[in-house]
Amino acid sequence: MLKEAIERAQKPTPPFWKKVRKAGIVLAAIGTGIVTTVMTGGIAAPAWLTTLGYVLAGAGATMATTASLAVDEEPPQVPQPPKLQK
Image 1 (cartoon, one colour):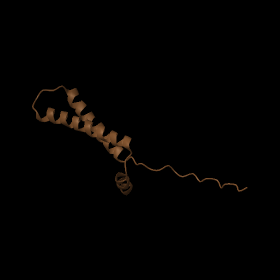
Image 2: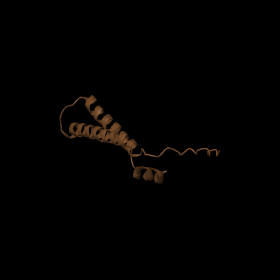
Image 3: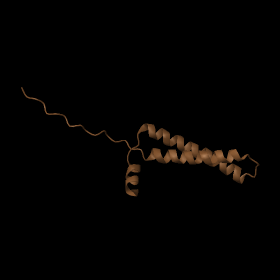
């Protein structure tokens, strides 16, 4: 299963999923920034802000990972029936 995931990650990613991956990375960075600022900044912040940071970081990381494993595969080829000769 790990080998399949590595192979999928090395294949080309469709353009739509590249955009989703970038959005996920941005969300994860924003969430990480919020959590880091609240935890190390020594400021009194509401609990919902910390929770929001964790949720954004988790959702963004999930989006980025899922989008990275999307593969641009060709649709299966349907065999054409033989042409009738006249």
